[in-house]
Length: 160
Image 1 (cartoon, rainbow, N blue to C red):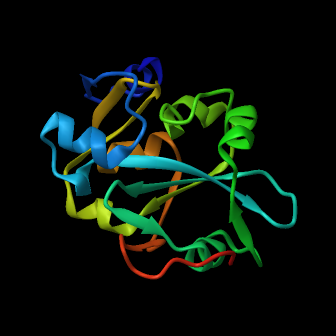
Image 2 (cartoon, rainbow, N blue to C red):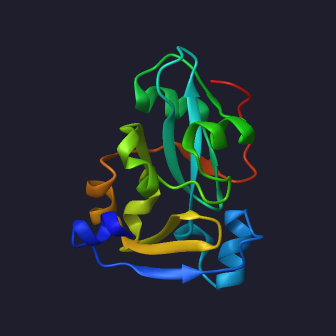
C-alpha cells in the first residue's frame, strides 16, 4: 500500500477471511467477477535464474510454455508452495507482485487484464486484496504484458 501511495496510485482495500487461499473462492466470497480477481504465481526458470511472478485471473490456468516464451527462457516450472513461500517471504494466498518489487524479479501480467480498468491483486498478506487500476499497476510493478494463460479446464501442461 505504501508503494501505491508513493506512486500516487488510487486503490481500495478489500478484505476477506484470511483462511481463504484460492482466488476463485475469494472472488465468489467477495461477489467479484472471477476474471477481475488476480492471483500471483511464482514460476522458476529451469536455468536457475531469478523466479518470475505471473499474475493471472482466478478463473484461468497458467500455460508454462507461454510463460517461457514471454520470459525469453527455455523452460519454466511452477514453484512448489513451500519454495514459493521461502523465496518470497510471503504465505501462499498472500503472495503479491506489489510486495515483491524490491526483489527486481520479472513480473508478467496476463493479457486479459487489459480488458478491465481495475483488478484485485494481493496486498501481500492473506485476507487483503487491493483494487488497483491495471495501467498504473503495470507501471508500479514494471510488468510485461503477455498472453500466458488459458481458460480453466483446458488440458494443462506438465512442464514447459
